[in-house]
Amino acid sequence: MLFISGAEIIFVFFIVLLLFGADKIPSIAKGLAKGINQVKQATNDIKSEIQNTTDIENPTEKIVDEFKDEIDQVKDGFDEMTDSVKRKF
Image (cartoon, rainbow, N blue to C red; front, side, top):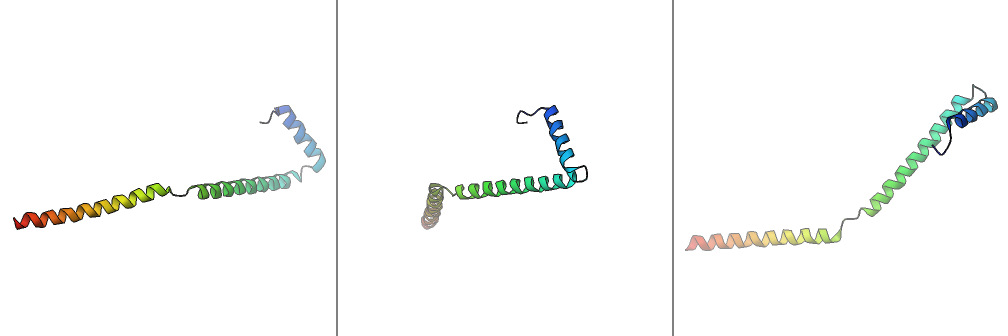
């Protein structure tokens, strides 16, 4: 964790305990937790906004789908025409 050993973490915690006292540490921890959650939420919002702007539908796929629909309609029209021709003969 950022090249900090266990002894260094204990030393920092001891200094915080001396500076703020035991009664202030829970409120400081709550404030830090709220700040971290706000940063996480902000980064998630930024990530989702970037993803939404880059998820533009591929225009070629849309054109291909439209062509497939048109081809299917033409095939159906030919099938109907051949059915009516077969019935007459």
